[in-house]
Image 1 (cartoon, rainbow, N blue to C red):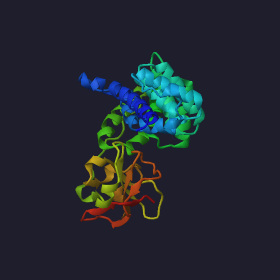
Image 2 (image 1 turned 120 degrees about the horizontal axis):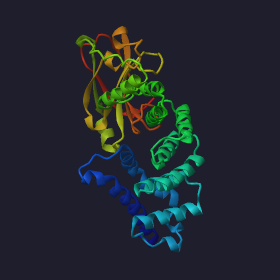
Image 3 (image 1 turned 60 degrees about the horizontal axis):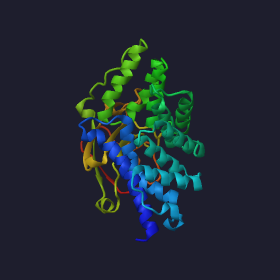
Image 4 (image 1 turned 30 degrees about the horizontal axis):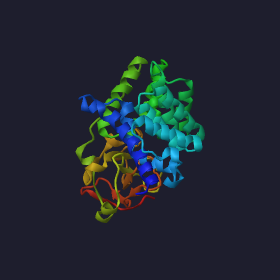
Length: 341
């Protein structure tokens, strides 16, 4: 490896490792990491790639930047130097924001994310990060008016963005608008997995109670004969070629054949569960007016989302859709192994 190549590798490693140390520190002490810290951990996999995008060819480093950083502060200083040379790098500002937040510099992190949001004003992920950083920099951890504008615009661009919807609900509850917060959060119930749905329902019911509203209707167990069993697996040749990240998820969806994309029933599973058998029933129906027990035929598909988001993205993978007459006695077999439609 050349000297400049080594400098780049050291810069990327030092900055990423420094953030990792901060993220894992609460776990070493036997405490659960708070939500903002966990979000930093999810971003670590982008760190080296972001630095490469920012720095470009290692030979472009000037002599002042060739010395390998000894500390996280040195790595941050080198990253700032690169951004001074080319301040148009959105990923560079996002990476600097993560590093500043990991280093306990909430105000500097807010400024870095603000620069990223200015460069990418229509990118939901960037807007949500910038809004979150404003709340973390506030002494009371409140979302201010500018943060709320960012969250609302993120949802205008991508209505199914889960973190934008969650944070907007928090901001509404902070503002003394519990009914609005509950209404903002309720669509998330159709998007999160079973492990997250329970705590989410609790928060929604607390907000509804604060607003003088009754709790959400109890989720009734569907009759056993109504359940649609779906066996999902990953094509072996694909499994050998594709590296799945931790945030990737599998969505099992039953929808109306030839109808709208809104699912009649859907479940979210982690990639670590593959292969698995899902059981779709009325409890998995996101729309109270249309349930699995009320239709005679569905189209079933399994979608592997690399981002973990329910909204289809380029690069997602899917099984071939299978039409099923209901009630079905045998499991539907779906094999993920083709480009998502």
